[in-house]
Amino acid sequence: MDILDAIILGVIQGLTEFLPVSSSGHLELGKALLGDHFVPQESLLFTVILHFATALSTLVVFRKDVWEITRGMFQFKWNEETQFSLKVITSMIPAVFVGLFFEEQMEAFFDGNIRFVGFMLLITAVLLYFADKAKDTDKKVTFVSAFIVGLSQAIAILPGISRSGATISTSVLLGVDKTKAARFSFLMVVPLIFGKMAKDIFGGELNFANEQAFAIGAGFIAAFLAGLVACTWMIQLVKRSKLTYFAIYCLVIGLLAIGYGFWG
Image (cartoon, rainbow, N blue to C red; front, side, top):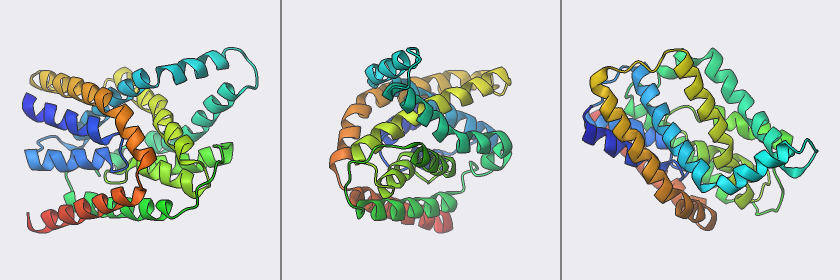
Protein backbone atom coordinates (compact mmCIF):
# COMPACT_ATOMS: atom_id res chain seq x y z
CA MET A 1 0.00 0.00 0.00
CA ASP A 2 1.44 3.36 -1.02
CA ILE A 3 0.82 6.77 0.54
CA LEU A 4 -1.84 7.77 -2.01
CA ASP A 5 -3.85 4.60 -1.33
CA ALA A 6 -3.62 5.25 2.41
CA ILE A 7 -4.82 8.84 1.99
CA ILE A 8 -7.76 7.68 -0.15
CA LEU A 9 -8.73 5.11 2.48
CA GLY A 10 -8.33 7.73 5.21
CA VAL A 11 -10.69 10.11 3.41
CA ILE A 12 -13.19 7.26 2.91
CA GLN A 13 -13.06 6.52 6.64
CA GLY A 14 -13.42 10.19 7.60
CA LEU A 15 -16.43 10.74 5.36
CA THR A 16 -18.31 7.50 6.05
CA GLU A 17 -17.72 7.19 9.82
CA PHE A 18 -20.47 9.71 10.51
CA LEU A 19 -23.03 8.25 8.11
CA PRO A 20 -25.03 5.03 8.70
CA VAL A 21 -23.39 3.28 5.72
CA SER A 22 -20.57 1.25 7.41
CA SER A 23 -17.16 2.91 7.26
CA SER A 24 -15.43 -0.44 7.84
CA GLY A 25 -17.39 -1.96 4.96
CA HIS A 26 -16.40 0.91 2.67
CA LEU A 27 -12.78 0.51 3.79
CA GLU A 28 -12.85 -3.17 2.83
CA LEU A 29 -14.33 -2.27 -0.55
CA GLY A 30 -11.70 0.45 -1.00
CA LYS A 31 -8.88 -1.92 -0.05
CA ALA A 32 -10.10 -4.49 -2.56
CA LEU A 33 -10.39 -1.96 -5.38
CA LEU A 34 -6.95 -0.49 -4.59
CA GLY A 35 -5.34 -3.92 -4.23
CA ASP A 36 -5.12 -4.78 -0.53
CA HIS A 37 -1.92 -6.68 0.31
CA PHE A 38 -2.49 -6.80 4.07
CA VAL A 39 -3.04 -10.09 5.86
CA PRO A 40 -6.33 -10.06 7.86
CA GLN A 41 -4.67 -9.06 11.17
CA GLU A 42 -2.80 -6.12 9.58
CA SER A 43 -5.92 -5.13 7.66
CA LEU A 44 -7.96 -5.00 10.88
CA LEU A 45 -5.24 -3.02 12.66
CA PHE A 46 -5.13 -0.46 9.85
CA THR A 47 -8.91 -0.16 10.07
CA VAL A 48 -8.68 0.38 13.84
CA ILE A 49 -6.01 3.08 13.36
CA LEU A 50 -8.26 4.96 10.94
CA HIS A 51 -11.17 4.61 13.37
CA PHE A 52 -8.90 6.03 16.07
CA ALA A 53 -8.29 9.08 13.86
CA THR A 54 -12.02 9.71 13.46
CA ALA A 55 -12.54 9.08 17.18
CA LEU A 56 -10.09 11.94 17.80
CA SER A 57 -12.04 14.16 15.42
CA THR A 58 -15.22 13.22 17.30
CA LEU A 59 -13.58 14.36 20.53
CA VAL A 60 -12.71 17.69 18.94
CA VAL A 61 -16.23 18.26 17.58
CA PHE A 62 -17.95 17.10 20.79
CA ARG A 63 -15.37 18.68 23.12
CA LYS A 64 -18.01 20.66 25.02
CA ASP A 65 -20.13 17.55 25.58
CA VAL A 66 -17.10 15.52 26.67
CA TRP A 67 -15.98 18.28 29.04
CA GLU A 68 -19.43 18.58 30.61
CA ILE A 69 -19.70 14.81 31.04
CA THR A 70 -16.20 14.57 32.55
CA ARG A 71 -16.79 17.52 34.88
CA GLY A 72 -20.13 16.08 35.98
CA MET A 73 -18.57 12.72 36.81
CA PHE A 74 -16.01 14.31 39.15
CA GLN A 75 -18.74 16.06 41.09
CA PHE A 76 -19.52 12.59 42.48
CA LYS A 77 -23.24 13.17 42.28
CA TRP A 78 -25.99 11.12 40.70
CA ASN A 79 -26.44 13.77 38.02
CA GLU A 80 -27.24 13.56 34.32
CA GLU A 81 -23.56 13.59 33.32
CA THR A 82 -22.68 10.70 35.64
CA GLN A 83 -25.65 8.69 34.41
CA PHE A 84 -24.71 9.35 30.78
CA SER A 85 -21.13 8.18 31.42
CA LEU A 86 -22.36 4.99 33.09
CA LYS A 87 -24.70 4.37 30.17
CA VAL A 88 -21.74 4.68 27.78
CA ILE A 89 -19.80 2.17 29.91
CA THR A 90 -22.83 -0.14 29.88
CA SER A 91 -23.02 0.07 26.09
CA MET A 92 -19.36 -0.97 25.82
CA ILE A 93 -19.77 -4.31 27.63
CA PRO A 94 -20.88 -6.45 24.63
CA ALA A 95 -18.18 -5.09 22.28
CA VAL A 96 -15.47 -5.49 24.93
CA PHE A 97 -16.57 -9.11 25.45
CA VAL A 98 -16.40 -9.81 21.70
CA GLY A 99 -13.03 -8.04 21.40
CA LEU A 100 -11.47 -9.99 24.27
CA PHE A 101 -12.74 -13.46 23.44
CA PHE A 102 -13.38 -13.45 19.68
CA GLU A 103 -10.66 -11.18 18.28
CA GLU A 104 -9.12 -13.85 16.05
CA GLN A 105 -12.52 -14.76 14.63
CA MET A 106 -13.21 -11.08 13.91
CA GLU A 107 -9.88 -10.70 12.11
CA ALA A 108 -10.93 -13.41 9.66
CA PHE A 109 -13.71 -11.19 8.35
CA PHE A 110 -11.19 -8.51 7.29
CA ASP A 111 -9.73 -10.58 4.47
CA GLY A 112 -11.18 -8.72 1.50
CA ASN A 113 -14.30 -10.88 1.18
CA ILE A 114 -16.33 -8.41 -0.86
CA ARG A 115 -19.37 -10.68 -1.14
CA PHE A 116 -19.61 -10.90 2.65
CA VAL A 117 -19.37 -7.10 2.95
CA GLY A 118 -22.11 -6.78 0.34
CA PHE A 119 -24.49 -9.08 2.22
CA MET A 120 -23.81 -7.20 5.48
CA LEU A 121 -24.61 -3.91 3.70
CA LEU A 122 -27.97 -5.43 2.72
CA ILE A 123 -28.63 -6.16 6.41
CA THR A 124 -27.74 -2.55 7.22
CA ALA A 125 -30.22 -1.41 4.57
CA VAL A 126 -33.00 -3.48 6.16
CA LEU A 127 -32.21 -2.10 9.64
CA LEU A 128 -32.29 1.49 8.40
CA TYR A 129 -35.54 0.96 6.50
CA PHE A 130 -37.43 -0.41 9.50
CA ALA A 131 -35.95 2.23 11.81
CA ASP A 132 -37.20 4.94 9.47
CA LYS A 133 -40.72 3.54 9.77
CA ALA A 134 -40.63 3.70 13.59
CA LYS A 135 -42.69 6.41 15.27
CA ASP A 136 -40.86 9.52 16.50
CA THR A 137 -40.67 9.79 20.28
CA ASP A 138 -38.86 11.94 22.81
CA LYS A 139 -37.56 9.13 25.04
CA LYS A 140 -34.06 9.27 26.49
CA VAL A 141 -31.43 6.53 26.50
CA THR A 142 -31.90 4.26 29.52
CA PHE A 143 -29.45 1.74 30.99
CA VAL A 144 -31.41 -1.14 29.45
CA SER A 145 -31.53 0.51 26.02
CA ALA A 146 -27.82 1.40 26.32
CA PHE A 147 -26.96 -2.30 26.76
CA ILE A 148 -29.19 -3.34 23.86
CA VAL A 149 -27.63 -0.67 21.66
CA GLY A 150 -24.25 -2.00 22.83
CA LEU A 151 -25.21 -5.42 21.46
CA SER A 152 -25.82 -3.78 18.09
CA GLN A 153 -22.41 -2.10 18.31
CA ALA A 154 -20.76 -5.46 18.99
CA ILE A 155 -22.42 -7.03 15.95
CA ALA A 156 -21.40 -4.00 13.89
CA ILE A 157 -17.74 -4.97 14.29
CA LEU A 158 -18.44 -7.01 11.16
CA PRO A 159 -17.48 -5.06 8.02
CA GLY A 160 -20.60 -3.99 6.19
CA ILE A 161 -22.79 -3.64 9.27
CA SER A 162 -22.86 0.10 9.91
CA ARG A 163 -21.98 0.84 13.54
CA SER A 164 -23.77 4.18 13.57
CA GLY A 165 -26.58 2.76 11.46
CA ALA A 166 -27.06 -0.25 13.73
CA THR A 167 -26.85 1.74 16.96
CA ILE A 168 -29.05 4.62 15.78
CA SER A 169 -31.59 2.20 14.26
CA THR A 170 -31.71 0.12 17.42
CA SER A 171 -32.15 3.25 19.55
CA VAL A 172 -34.96 4.54 17.33
CA LEU A 173 -36.70 1.14 17.33
CA LEU A 174 -36.50 1.24 21.15
CA GLY A 175 -38.26 4.59 21.07
CA VAL A 176 -35.30 6.89 21.65
CA ASP A 177 -35.43 10.33 20.03
CA LYS A 178 -33.32 10.36 16.83
CA THR A 179 -31.26 13.39 17.92
CA LYS A 180 -30.45 11.80 21.28
CA ALA A 181 -29.75 8.49 19.54
CA ALA A 182 -27.25 10.11 17.13
CA ARG A 183 -25.43 11.92 19.96
CA PHE A 184 -25.19 8.74 22.04
CA SER A 185 -24.10 6.70 19.03
CA PHE A 186 -21.15 8.95 18.19
CA LEU A 187 -19.97 9.36 21.79
CA MET A 188 -20.29 5.70 22.84
CA VAL A 189 -17.65 4.51 20.39
CA VAL A 190 -14.89 6.91 21.50
CA PRO A 191 -13.78 5.10 24.71
CA LEU A 192 -14.08 1.78 22.91
CA ILE A 193 -11.67 2.82 20.14
CA PHE A 194 -9.26 4.38 22.64
CA GLY A 195 -9.32 1.17 24.67
CA LYS A 196 -8.64 -0.94 21.58
CA MET A 197 -5.70 1.29 20.64
CA ALA A 198 -4.26 1.09 24.17
CA LYS A 199 -4.57 -2.70 24.09
CA ASP A 200 -2.77 -2.93 20.74
CA ILE A 201 -0.02 -0.50 21.81
CA PHE A 202 0.74 -2.19 25.12
CA GLY A 203 0.30 -5.62 23.57
CA GLY A 204 2.91 -4.83 20.92
CA GLU A 205 0.49 -5.55 18.07
CA LEU A 206 1.15 -2.32 16.18
CA ASN A 207 4.10 -3.83 14.35
CA PHE A 208 3.75 -2.69 10.76
CA ALA A 209 6.80 -2.77 8.55
CA ASN A 210 8.86 0.44 8.47
CA GLU A 211 8.03 1.09 4.83
CA GLN A 212 4.33 1.13 5.76
CA ALA A 213 4.72 3.66 8.60
CA PHE A 214 4.57 6.75 6.38
CA ALA A 215 1.55 5.44 4.49
CA ILE A 216 -0.27 4.60 7.71
CA GLY A 217 0.58 8.03 9.12
CA ALA A 218 -0.75 9.69 5.97
CA GLY A 219 -3.95 7.66 6.19
CA PHE A 220 -4.35 8.61 9.86
CA ILE A 221 -3.98 12.34 9.13
CA ALA A 222 -6.35 12.12 6.15
CA ALA A 223 -9.00 10.34 8.25
CA PHE A 224 -8.64 12.87 11.09
CA LEU A 225 -8.93 15.92 8.82
CA ALA A 226 -11.78 14.42 6.78
CA GLY A 227 -13.52 13.55 10.04
CA LEU A 228 -13.19 17.11 11.31
CA VAL A 229 -14.68 18.49 8.11
CA ALA A 230 -17.42 15.88 7.82
CA CYS A 231 -18.51 15.33 11.42
CA THR A 232 -20.68 18.38 12.08
CA TRP A 233 -22.57 18.61 8.80
CA MET A 234 -22.94 14.86 8.37
CA ILE A 235 -24.46 14.52 11.84
CA GLN A 236 -26.96 17.22 10.89
CA LEU A 237 -27.63 15.30 7.68
CA VAL A 238 -28.36 12.12 9.64
CA LYS A 239 -30.72 14.00 11.96
CA ARG A 240 -32.67 15.72 9.18
CA SER A 241 -32.69 13.11 6.45
CA LYS A 242 -34.83 10.01 6.22
CA LEU A 243 -32.92 6.85 7.05
CA THR A 244 -34.59 5.27 3.99
CA TYR A 245 -32.24 7.30 1.77
CA PHE A 246 -29.25 5.66 3.43
CA ALA A 247 -31.02 2.28 3.25
CA ILE A 248 -31.33 2.65 -0.53
CA TYR A 249 -27.66 3.64 -0.77
CA CYS A 250 -26.56 0.58 1.26
CA LEU A 251 -28.82 -1.63 -0.86
CA VAL A 252 -27.28 -0.40 -4.11
CA ILE A 253 -23.66 -0.58 -2.86
CA GLY A 254 -24.33 -3.97 -1.30
CA LEU A 255 -25.68 -5.41 -4.56
CA LEU A 256 -22.76 -3.93 -6.51
CA ALA A 257 -20.31 -5.43 -4.00
CA ILE A 258 -21.94 -8.86 -4.27
CA GLY A 259 -21.85 -8.62 -8.07
CA TYR A 260 -18.21 -7.56 -8.00
CA GLY A 261 -17.40 -10.41 -5.61
CA PHE A 262 -18.88 -12.99 -7.97
CA TRP A 263 -17.83 -11.59 -11.33
CA GLY A 264 -15.24 -8.86 -10.65
